[in-house]
Length: 87
Image 1 (cartoon, one colour):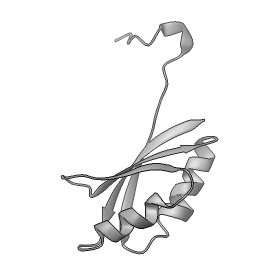
Image 2 (cartoon, rainbow, N blue to C red):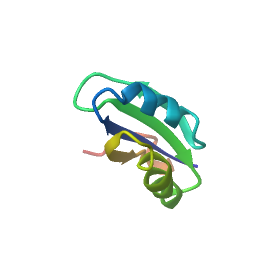
Image 3 (cartoon, one colour):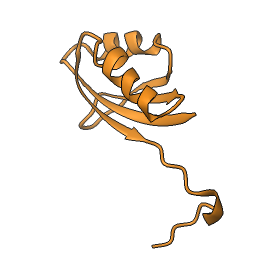
Image 4 (cartoon, rainbow, N blue to C red):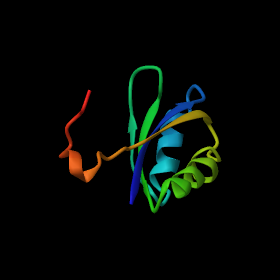
């Protein structure tokens, strides 16, 4: 499975309604209100990166009140590095 975080900007006054609408969508495991340059952070899980893209384009951006999104796919370190950084 592939995971990603999606940062969402909403129209003023619509954040709560957008959050509730997104929580009901398949593939969205969390929809958290945050303070800062974005209004919501979503945690997604899907079969692969293409499915993540489809979820963002059809299920998230299609919700009334969503202004824009920024998708951040989770990158797992290769198994042979033991999770350590080489830089």
